Length: 348
Image 1: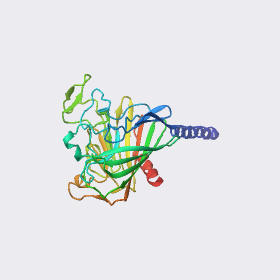
Image 2: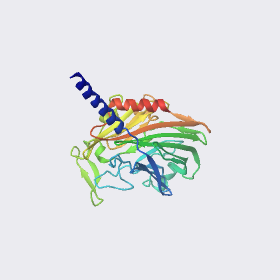
Image 3: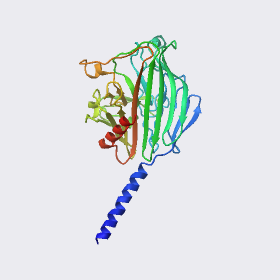
Image 4: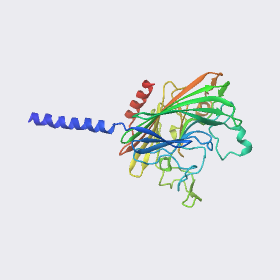
């Protein structure tokens, strides 16, 4: 009898180990150059995202972002508008990295919607070189870019390395960006920055305010506050702040989660202990902007404190972030995210 019991539990234990190892099995990442300014990122045989850096955009972006099962979790507008999504903030494209006030120039809000006579107030991040693409269980893509004014005078040089990985239900991006000043640079404390992502309507927090969306003919339609039956998202931070209360608070990580179709989707951004002003403030808005901004302290604390960052010519600053995207029957737990944050913080 005892032998049978031990055998039973042995089988169950082995099955659990196999199930766990199978679920975590890494898939191979590869890169395909689709055009002169677009590199496709595949995990296994599925498209994860595109690294896009055409001259028609004011910054490089990862767009769109797909889960392991192929669900698109980023908004389509303005590049590929979809029926029923909001058309505000045209500078919100996929995943990007910018800042609102660098030597008085606004890099974050620059887009095609800015009037020509106002463009001199904005900045561009112009990618000029792909440094490396290496396939493998951890696929690496690195590039060089210049942060410039309208006249293309360079304020900073950027070197960024993306590390992409994925398994059966998970996609992950580790980003490391080094900014080196080519002149004296001041990052003035501001609300909009640094790592940003604009998510699909399903992952927005249901709004109590009237909202405008596009219909199937491209016309605007108004959805009365409290009647949106598509948006079902929510935020939670490592400090337990939820929903709209996550905005302006600090935390090691923040998770956005909701249902898309039959799947539970979670997107987590994890801060790194070596980043400036760690742990970051969360610029996490219910309408679909999900951003980490360590330098917006004055706005986020209602003027109680502020944080400026100065770089003298030749000095550098490094920003590191991890993004985890999960699909399946449940969302990432706080324990799992604490583990991923610890691994990220200890690994680099």
